[in-house]
Image 1: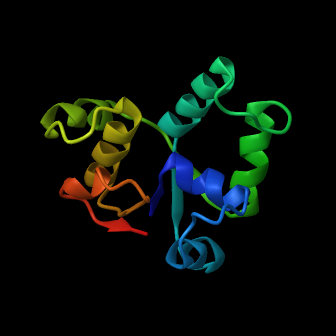
Image 2: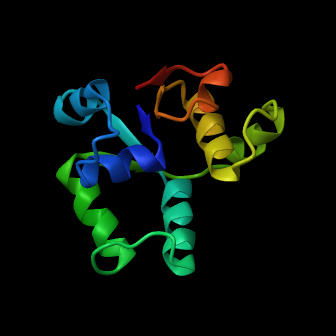
Image 3: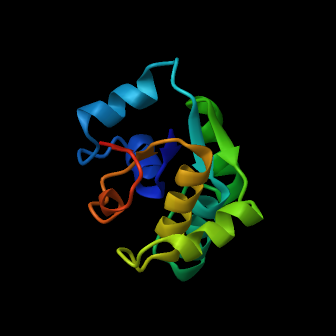
Length: 126
């Protein structure tokens, strides 16, 4: 399952917006969880712009939390990047579009609360 950026942040911060189903996904040790390198890039941009604050350096913060919940980083491949060209323009956020393209290419669902992602032909869980 590919974790959308907000889903990981909500899990880390025990945000009340995270669904019971998402909590189950994070807690049940048998799920293979993936986090896109694109989400790391998105977070880096937001940290740099002052729109996201994390405890300590972003790399250390992410590494710690990804290890804590046994999440594997999914690199962005050329196949993922060019897959964005085949997507309808339901979503304007380039990071979300890339996550959808990755999920489609890898054949995995997306853990997301974003209603625009559900408009794509990808399985979503929330």
